[in-house]
Amino acid sequence: MSHSNERELQLLRKHFLSLLSEEAPRLDHPINDLFIQLDCAAGELRLYDDTDEELSRLPVYAWEDTGSVDAPSEAALETLREVVTRLEQKGYWDKAIFARPFSVVLVRSDFSVLEELLFLDEELVQLSTPLLEGLNDELNEFLSELLVDLK
Image (cartoon, rainbow, N blue to C red; front, side, top):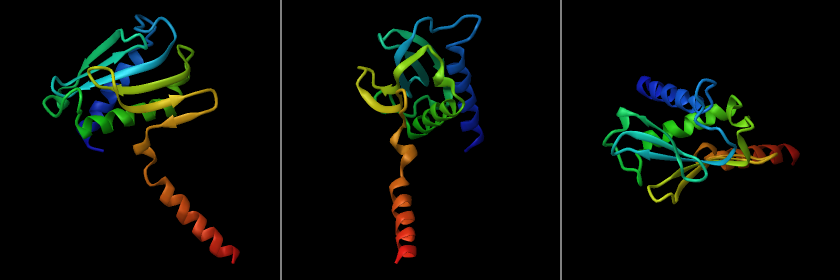
């Protein structure tokens, strides 16, 4: 992880945490979906609730002119996936304001889905597919080794 990427991760993390800040929370009612737009042409992250009402905007200058809102850069996508995962690991999405089932979805300018980053239900947690890549190969290798021992 590069130093600049780490700065972007911290910037995004603080921005997500500010949604629920005690002084001036941007979320004052439970939501089931959090929609995210990465506008890499403008270098901006936009958050929307499940009624498509804008909650916040955050300038991310490192992303400026690296893609578009409909085709964000891979670096921006990777950073966003990482921050959503880290927040999940810390229990951020377990707060009552994020009603179940709950999802974090990356969307285009017309709100069509680019990628579902997180889906939570009562007992189900699903992170984005890129985080799970290679898992099938690892399981197959494990099972092969296990079956060899049984012969």
